[in-house]
Image (cartoon, rainbow, N blue to C red; front, side, top):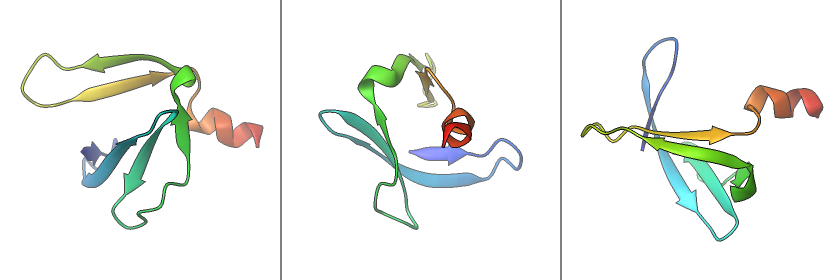
Amino acid sequence: MIKISRRGYTQHIRLLCLTSERLYNITKKDPYPKEGLLFQDICGITVSPYKDGFICIHTKETYEDRVKLN
């Protein structure tokens, strides 16, 4: 998949890896998963009705929320 940054609209290649318990977003630079998202933390998934392949995964908390807790 391709991640598009909010500020510069640059594209970054990502791998979306699904296991039996977690969802991982793996970068091309560092192919080892650092952080996984548990399926129980996913509130919903939105898929674009167009042929652009856009997908949005809705979670209970944001990455900034997790950083502040640690």
